Image (spheres, rainbow, N blue to C red):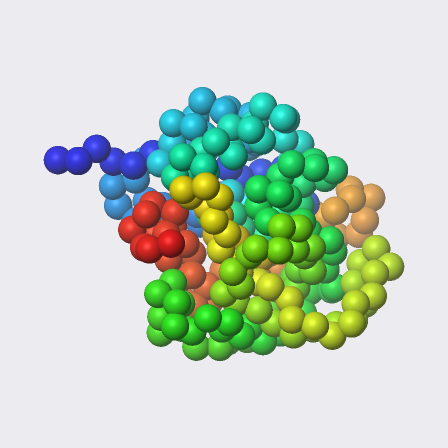
Length: 237
């Protein structure tokens, strides 16, 4: 009988600005349901030995400090064929100059939580086979394309005001993309906000509504399932 794969699930943030407990449970369940995968859970990226020795990497983080050693380990893991399924604020990496060049993008900001349509940018891609355009309630992430080599899979078209005093012209906004890094690569999906009333960017802010984002939608659960399969190399690049 073949040995099970080892998944490194990194989920958390010192800022506690999302419901990381909820995301950790849901992602661990998705990995468990994929069968023949054992899961090791971490709150940050600093166990380089675990990352380099793992078979797949799944993350749901936000503004986690990442050392030069850890950044280098992630790059080596990908270059030798590893795959990284990164969700939501995983590309919010403070002032780290290295990680956006690995992930391909950097989080900038988002407008208030809202409903918006999701378009299928590559309907013929095996990762999106059978998935039709859908509408979602979530944080609509505005991200900077750092490497200009991402392959956009899901997108929406939006422009307007966002937090931090930013204002954007109407344009296509990537929501899911794939990027090759050496023999491996990254699959990033911006969708997936979740927070409890006390999960907020700054402790002094008033409590906010309890948001579950798209997590209960069958189409989102299917995207998570396919993302895990992709990271486990059970789907083509």
